[in-house]
Length: 290
Length: 118
Image 1 (cartoon, rainbow over the protein chains, first blue to last red):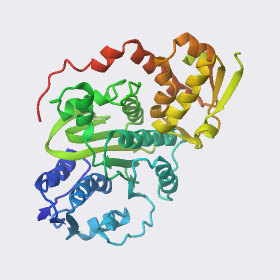
Image 2 (image 1 turned 90 degrees about the horizontal axis):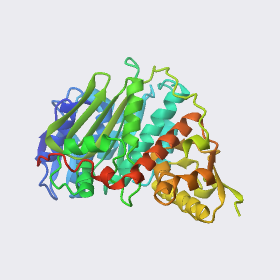
Image 3 (image 1 turned 45 degrees about the vertical axis):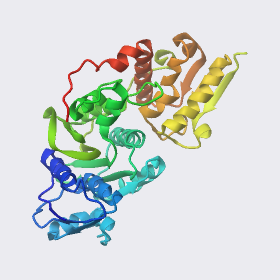
Image 4 (image 1 turned 180 degrees about the vertical axis):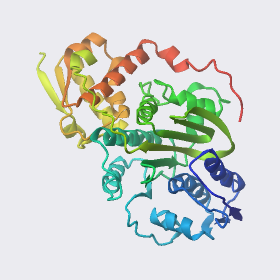
């Protein structure tokens, strides 16, 4: 089967177009799929992670997936971020060192994820961020990565990649999985078998709500990230199954997508020029905390 | 009785990254046992390079499901945390107190919402 893919940007349409690939190929087993990018004029590098959610599902069903007819610019972007290595195409040296390459990590690979960030966040093209900003950014990424590990129930691991855009002073980092999605977790936890994806994302974004088993408190990670993104004037996008959530300085929105994205993907975009101090001056003691 | 015991987190979990629920559970199990034995405990976060809420929820937040606030306040201290990580811990503790004080309604808070099938 040949699937045509148009321009893919990190927005509602981009995610819905990727989910549409999943829809078109949903029934395939032991088949072959060619992703035809001849009409794709631009592919935003961080969108490699959600695209791989679809590819990994297809490969789970023993389909042979290939990618073809890329325009030179798109080919360059996807070779630089090493995404095309999963299609056995060689990588291209990222001379500017503004790319955090595409990687597939095991669910329990928190240590490897740390090594990955240590290695690639120090690329010479990536600006030195304030200590407080760099720490909050990394904390946010770990919260997302570890949440994917616990909740995704994905057989294929977690897919990560990032890109720094020097002209815009923005860095995007994307973490995707091919798991059951937020909706299934919230449905199981609340017993609401028909809860929709948008409502499930809203539930998960609410402080204190967690689907973690064992009756443990939780549900702070996403709220803390949202608070950070607000201060930083960045952006967060959460896509899970039919749900698309976006929060930025322009406001907050949640929309139902036309197609079912096979997993969960979180993209955070930070303003790297932010010089706000994230190192709080409070002098809390143990007595104040407990 | 009431000996002061220091738990060095990095030694206990063998890692400078306090990120996983499994490691959080290991820390919880140790603290829980010591509080039951009426020991005074200092949790040392010295040398920790990354700390996230997911870990703290399991390691410390979970204590509020087993012990009263007084016991925890009297027997537990922390050291080696930066001021922003102290704020994070405060957030986790406040959330845990709220969670265990009203667990059922907290869990069910959204059950009244309308649903739409996909």
